[in-house]
Image 1 (cartoon, chains in turn orange, blue):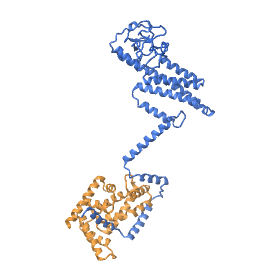
Image 2 (tube, rainbow over the protein chains, first blue to last red):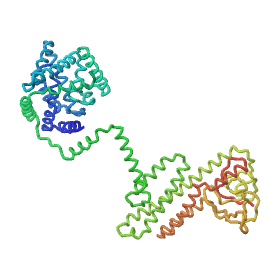
Image 3 (cartoon, rainbow over the protein chains, first blue to last red):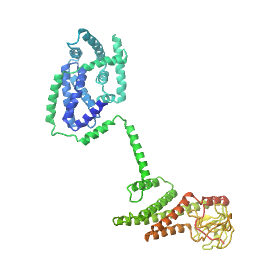
Image 4 (cartoon, rainbow over the protein chains, first blue to last red):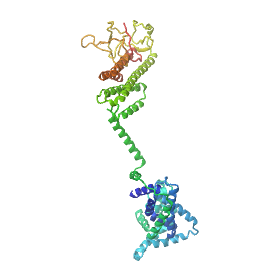
Length: 188
Length: 342
């Protein structure tokens, strides 16, 4: 609830073109957007570029068009990220390389030298499992899983970001989770 | 693997984050870029911030809940307002609430006769309130002269309203009488009642007409209690068309037992004054008292008017019309006006 109220406050201020509020929104959502982009494109560098582009685009849009129709700043940022990722895909020549890059990216991000090999192995094992499952899911379901269970967006925010109704999002999230569970069960 | 385990595994992905150095660099870059684009520093006022906070505080409530809360506030506020305004007088702050309540009451009354009765009742109450305000010594100060003049004008308007509504009710009932009696199988001996021929006898159930030939009642020969009428002018007690002041719209002029206690015979005073003349006279007297600033006299007159109106409301003459109906076999209502039978 607090995060929701904070978001509404930031949205109100960003609508008034308060740049400090926008920077506060960046501090709050940069990690999530990076993560979202990372799981989409599978590459850390590309994910960083996309993250910067997303926030700049959101600010420019707020300046020119206004955010009157938006109910949630977070959802609007996710929506922008989604569109930019689609544009990015169009520019990609080799989509297969995305899957290999994802594995390398995850390795670098999740493991560090302080962890002992067993811990690293355990993390990687779990991650392998989940990643493999996510890869096989269709884009729509993957987005739902990342937004709902990793970034913890509300159904209303996901609905606004994806342009669907909250009811549809609820159903699809459930189905996505079931699909992932079935995939992981098959893997085992 | 159950849902809980799967979600726990998915939560590990939360650790996927960019480096903090990159995050800081990008932040500075973004700040520099957006600073160039903003023309002037936009400040959010304290009021706007508080309004936003207030709105967000209750944002968890669905819109239907808001609608219900607003409706409850309006109804509760309206009820309290109406309660507080109940005893307010002209010039009081809450008097306008009372006026609005009365307007709503009138608007919600769809029957024309009831509407006219209510309007008449309210007008007489208003007139009474005006006299009470003007009779208050605290009101009659130099600064309130204009208000006093306005109230005096309003008083006269209210009196006129009472007269007009009374006349309307009168007319409506006469029209009803005419409609009811036109289909009856009563032997119409009204030809005997030529204009001005008050000596003609009429039988029970016969239509009564006034001098102008306008139907005003059906003779039942009895009053509401089934008693015969005694005309003190003629001394006759038979059931002829005796003028009664007991009309559908007015209180009886006077009713008294003819002799001794327990007498069942009602007396009717002079029947030349009709009930409508009675109320008009009382209202005129009230106006005269008001004009000479005899407010207590005006209040007394208005009290009488209030009683007459209350009699109309309570339908004190319903019995007459009902008995008239039962004896005459017609659907006639009570009588209005008077005629003397001899």
